Image (tube, rainbow, N blue to C red; front, side, top):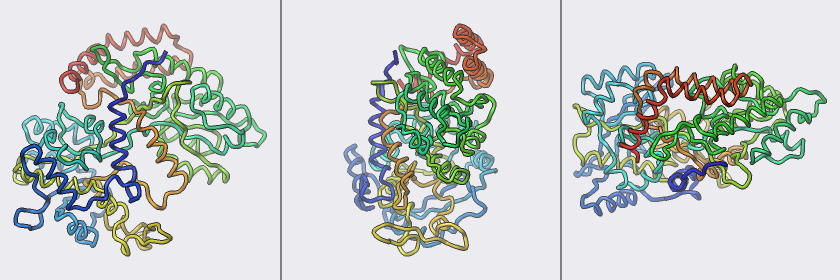
Length: 539
C-alpha cells in the first residue's frame, strides 16, 4: 500500500505561490494590481499592527533611497543602468539601484574578499557555491547578515510571492537569511510524444498501469508508422547524484509514496531508498527494463545524451524537467517534421491523488548585509529595503520586468503586448536594457506572456495543477558532518544497488543488504545528524 504524505502545508504554499506569480505578465490573472502607494500602505498597516511603523522606500526627507547591490554577471557586458528602464524603475519605486556586476567566474572569490575586508554592499546575491562558502557561514554565525524571520510577514506581497514552503526550504540554521531566487517547485517529470499518442489512438497516461501500456505500445505498435521495429517507449539517464530528482527513479518513487529524498517520520529521518515504496518503484522500473520498454543503457549515458536520443525521434517518453518541453518542440521537428510533444501528466496509483517530488523551489538567496561600511545599519533601513522588494513583488512591477515600457520595449497589437526586437543585438530591446539585473530583483519562477503558444500555456497549466501535489524533501537546509565527509561514497552504494536491481544482478534481498551496508558505512550517522537538525530547526 502507498503511504499517504502530509501535503497540507504544501497545498497552502502552492495556492499562495500561484496566486502571486501565476499571472505575471498578464493583468487579468494578477493577484494584485496595487500601485506602489497601495503596496507601501499594506506594508505599513501590517507593521503598525505589530506596534511599529514601516518606512517607505523614500528617505524621511523625501529623497530617493539608494540601495547598493552586487550580483553575478553572466554575459560579456554589464547593462547600462542609466537607460530608460532603470530610470523608470527609480521613478516608480523611489529607489536608486547602485549595482556592482561581478563576472561569475570570480564571484565566489569576490564575496570572500569583501567579507574579509568588511566591504559587502547592502544587498547581494548568494548562489549555491556562495551559500556553502565557509567565510560566509562564519560571518552568518557571527550575526553578519540580517535574519528576516521577524519581518517578512509584514510585507504581504513579498511573503505571498515566495510562498510558505519556499521560505521554509531556504532557511539556514533554522532562520531566513535572504529572499529566495525562485524556481519551479513541481519541475521534475517527463515529456511525451503527443503525435505518437494520436497515431495510436491513445490518451496520455496518468496511472502506473497506463504508463506501462503506453510504453509497451510505443515500443511494439510502430507509433511512427514507418513499418520498422525501431522505437522504444522510455529513455532516461541515471548518472550523477544531482540527477536523482529528474531521472525518473525519484519521480516514480515519490509517486509510489516514498519520500522525496528524505522524510521525517515517527521521530526519525528516513531516506527514500530505505522504504518499501522505493522498492515498489524499482520493481516497476525493472519490469519496464526487462520487457524492453526502457533504454538498455540508462545507467551509462549522461543527461545530455538522453535528450539527444529523444530528439532523434526513436523514443516516446523522456524523463527530465518539464519546462524542457519547449526545447524538445524546437529540436525534434527538425528531424521529424510532424512531431509534437507535451508534458506527461503526474503519474499516480489508480484511485490515488498524484504525488510530485518537488524541487527546493529556489536557487540561491538575495541577502542583506549587517556588518561593514556598506551594510544596512539600522532596522529602519532594512524595512526600506524590504519595502522595495515588496513593491517588486506586485503585478505592476512584475509587468515592468516582463514587458518593460510601452513604445520602447513593447507595443500593443490586437489587445496583446508584442515585444520590440532589437535587430542589432538580435534580441528583444527589454533584454538588452535589463541585462543580468534579474538575478537581484524579485522574479517569478515562470511568467505567462501574451505571446505564449499552446505548448507553453499547457506547460504552465500543468505546473499549476501539480502545485497542490508537491512533496517536499525534509532534508533541504539540513547539514550532516558525516555526509559532508562520506557523501559521495554513501551515494554510490545505494545508486549502484538501485541500478544492479533493475539490471537483475542484485535481487531484493541483496538490495536490502546493501542498504544495511550503507547504514553501517555511515548512513546511520547521517540519519542521526539529519534527525537532530530537523528537530532543532524544523519540527
